[in-house]
Length: 456
Image 1 (cartoon, rainbow, N blue to C red):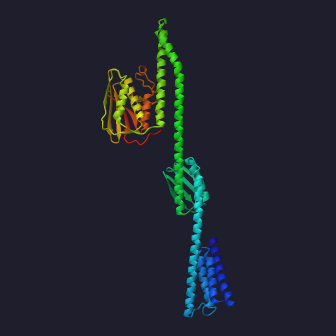
Image 2: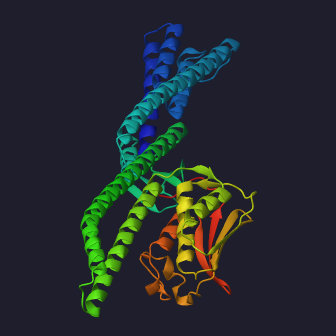
Image 3: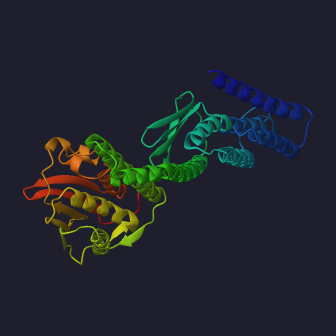
């Protein structure tokens, strides 16, 4: 209502001024050409305000005032001669044309100024956002600054289908949505900037979020790598510090065990326990160091094409040195697809399960390694003729330091082997499980054929 009253007041004042100019010029007997130019200048002056309605009203008022005082009979709008009609038509056409051109020029000038201001705001907006180092910081800065710089009532950024939401200001009657990539979305409330600016805002915020995301991942990767290096260093130092006294304990126990002056059976049994537990502690230290090296590979893995037959043959060569009279049977087709991953980790994975099969199988029994292709995966199986594993333990045996209840007192080990194998399989996007078969336990790996990378 207020805006309408202001417009009516402007129309009344400008048209009244036009009539007054025409009346004063008539009383002063001014030249008709000079008066027409003066009235046209007034039309141009009003048109520069950029109001189409006001400009059209001014053009009509100037034409009528000119006709009232200077065409045919003064004090009348009646036109009786062809000359008067031509003059009036020319005056109306000229006034409207000048009005349209002036309004259009003013609006283009305003548009140019607005675009320049928007570009300056976009540059300032980009400079502010580039200082962010995290996705949360970038999104928070974006909503705060987009509202402040572009005079919006509010803004919202939703990251990854609404998992994280950042808001600033309050919702308005008008809103627009802009995609930022990776499932993110920017919503603007209130008076909207131009379509070009909204598109530019989407590109800038999307790039800044990507930059912050990459920075976070790089920082996280570097932190993980340093953490793994520190852990390996600490483990190596602890292993060295443990092995120094352990070597002395082992040497002393071996000497006492071979001595003949221990008179009681209980004393000889205690010495044997010390000797055996020293060996067990040494194996625990060695496997802990192996685990640290494997985790180090997971922190900085290699991605290479790996042949399953080559991996199986390498493991068979390593375990062949201590298999004794057990039979190792390998049935792996040569045409299996290549896996993409870290060959060192693949060998360690298979080695742990084969070593477990050797420990829990009887002398003279058979250990079998097979592999088949199934759709987009390779199924790798290690079977042995050991005792059946209770159903209640088939998930627990893959936990760290867990040793089964069957024959665990007669088998050397630390309970880390299957946990290591499971960790490596999952790092390559695969899995491991246990099947209980009539001939004995069968550990099976399912590995995807096309693996683009390894999870850290």
